[in-house]
Length: 245
Image 1 (cartoon, rainbow, N blue to C red):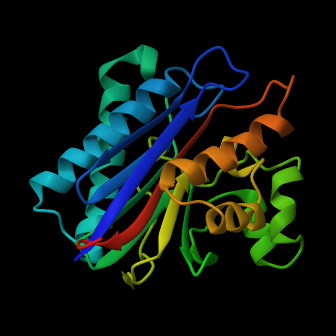
Image 2 (cartoon, helix red, strand yellow; image 1 turned 180 degrees about the horizontal axis):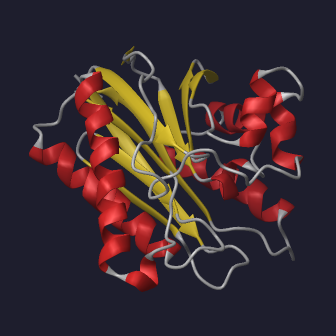
C-alpha cells in the first residue's frame, strides 16, 4: 500500500480577498477557484470542495467513472441550488479539480482551468485539460500550449461549476496505477500561470518532501509577481511512498 504525504498552501496574492479553496482528506484532494468578477466566488469554491468531499464519503469512496462523474454533476446541481436559494449569490461560479485514490490507483477530474499534474521520475506523465477558449485553440494547433499563459483570452472558460445544468463532461481519464516515488500537484491558475511545467519538474527533483517542493515553487512565483496585482494562488503537493518507509 502506498502512503501519501501532502502539503498545501493558499495565498490571496494581490487581491483583496481569497476566492480559492481546498480540502485534503483521506483518499481525496480537492481544489476550487471562485471566479473573479462574480458575486460570492469564495462561497462557490468553499461549498464545492466541501460538498464533493462529503459525496465521496457518502458514496463509499468510489473509483469508477460513473460515480465520479455523478459527484461532479451533483456538486454542480448543489451550487445551482444555492444560487436559486439566495439571489445575492446567483452569479457565483467556480472551477474545480480533484484527485481520488484507493491506495493503489488514482483518478482525477476537473472543470475549468484549475489543474492536475502527475509526475513520475520527476517528469510530468499526465495532466488535466483546461476547459477554456485558449486550451481549445491550442488543441487545434493554432497556438502553442505554453502560450495559453499569455493569451488575452486566457480567462475565458467554457465550463465551470454553477453555470449550466449540464456540465457536458462524459468521460474521465483512465485510472493510473501509482508507483512509489510518484508525485502529483493540484493548483489554481494563479499558481500555474507563474510556475512553468519544467520548473515544477526541476523543483520536484531537488526536493525531499512535499513541503519543500511547494516551497521551491512558491518562491519562484513570488519572485515573478513581486509588486504585481496577481491573482489568488493555491497548490496541493502530494508525494507517494511505501507504508514501510
